[in-house]
Length: 215
Image (cartoon, rainbow, N blue to C red):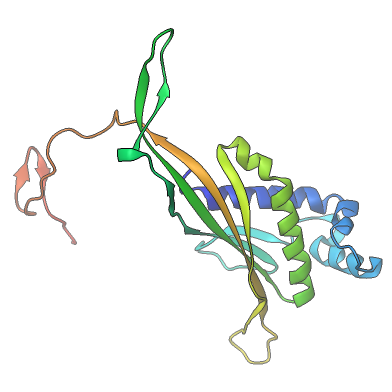
């Protein structure tokens, strides 16, 4: 699942929030030490009229205007965790005999940033805790997709992003960092044959034109 962690994480956050928003008692249970009146205010704002469509979920860099409150998931980093010697991996593919099907193999870490944005700091607080709970409660969904683990790396400071006009209060943001690991195996059956050869744009070799045409 390399390269898809942000999309999978966004999906479980969205679906998990749908389930949490539909269960008022579960929502209230997240906030111990908070009065019922305040919990009700948070719930009424985030789930108006009993619907859960106010909070927007989207991947980063989408060409649409973000409406608040919003949860935006960004794919941040993909460091190598473990690589076998010469990336040699494989699976047992024999019946009564020792036979290994060789595959290119690597274990990757994947890090995603969950940007939580709201117009009020207390709504940001409520949504931050809700997203944390949803991730922890739905991590089995990621395991079923083949991810090995899910680790919370912490939440950043509450920050204020000022709007263009000075009379606007601004947007309050907080970023959660999540990390997972994924075992990636790729068959080498589609390895291209022949030599790697670079040639000029006005030369054709074996029906392939070379170079880069920027026109």
